Length: 279
Image 1 (tube, one colour):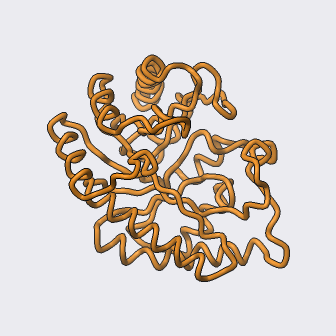
Image 2 (cartoon, helix red, strand yellow):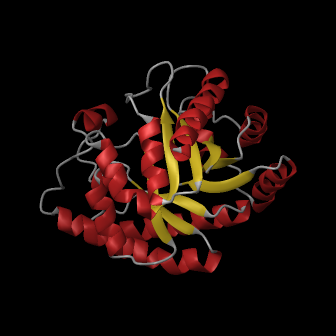
């Protein structure tokens, strides 16, 4: 296993984005092996020249840019709306290719019938369908959209990592339902340790052998939206038992100053996950 940090750890969508150039310097100083770029954190300048400067900076710091965390939503009844989301994701693949990343984080999307994120969390990530449609409809839309992306991912050599991220993928069952219909070496799972609100370890076990990237949540100082007591020794046993050897990507989501909390979280993850792997 290698340890990286999501740039999201330094910016929680509040105020101006924390510059990725700074994230790279921080990651090197704190002892990480690489970073995951939150695409929204790039800001307005997503020119090839900027992306290549970031790639060069990572190289000179001896850091990987191993993934790009993207946002899309395929749960739209209108086919044209879904087409726009596919096109947006193709642009995200182009960003990842320019950065030299091997994976993008993919979302399935959700019905959006619960507007408030706090209310969605209170409902454990579940929400009712748009009137006149069913869950089967939504899964069909998502599967069709991802199938359209596979040739684009293959052309660029980039894996689509579907995350357990609320909506249709709030349970491992939903993630697997989608992956089973998109059998491709360019499809895998981004396993987020903080996105299962119930039976978290059992659900992690269901996805561990499909996982291409792990998001490891930390909530020092109390969670921004919620926090969970995650047993990372147990998580480590699940991952090592499945043969996982990839990146552990820290997503710090607490209220403590990230300059203090991020290195503390890295120490905790290394201690617990490597302890489990050694057993």
